[in-house]
Image 1: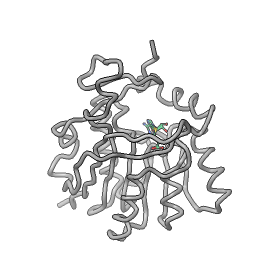
Image 2 (image 1 turned 90 degrees about the vertical axis):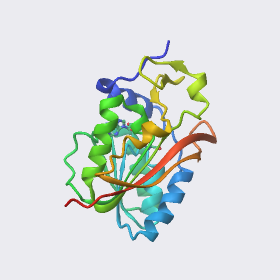
Image 3 (image 1 turned 60 degrees about the vertical axis):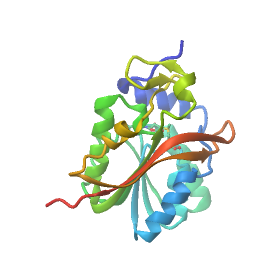
Length: 226
Ligand SMILES: C[S@@+](CC[C@H](N)C(=O)[O-])C[C@H]1O[C@@H](n2cnc3c(N)ncnc32)[C@H](O)[C@@H]1O
């Protein structure tokens, strides 16, 4: 029976895993490639990647010329990212911390991104994290996320968890699979203008080799506070 990740031990769980390897490789995800084009069109300068892990996407954004801050619970994950940044001469800010507790300044990023972070959380935390991304994004800036969809094969194949639409993956991670209503509910219309809300194939090359996931790509504009 795999150990289920609970919020209290997420830092220990992730540190233990990244202490053994980079986990998610060095190739950027297909979603990061798409977001970089949008960010350039939108004249984004500063990006926060929350839950950046070992930095495959954060380093890609830095290579593309954006001013990037990567935040993650795991010092070892950021150690992998630092090693790559030093090797490639990239300027990037890498911070150990919890998205919900970090002391980053409100409204300080043109865009905030969370790839495979929100779907790991139980319900009150999912909403709290999206609110936190909203707070850290400047008025009119972008909040982008990728999270597993109920169309992903794991939804039918993996061990059920008592929470609705939630499964435990073979590595012991609790994963919430979103349907259309569920994902839209994360973006209250008084705070977000939802620009993109679609199920896409996210291609990635983690340490185990290339995989594709069916997931929700959501991109929203932070509505300017009145
Ligand atoms: C599935 S991994 C994805 C990593 C990265 N986004 C990627 O695509 O390579 C989820 C990451 O979220 C981080 N994480 C989990 N909870 C977090 C939190 N509350 N604050 C910051 N990072 C968190 C974990 O340490 C882990 O690196």
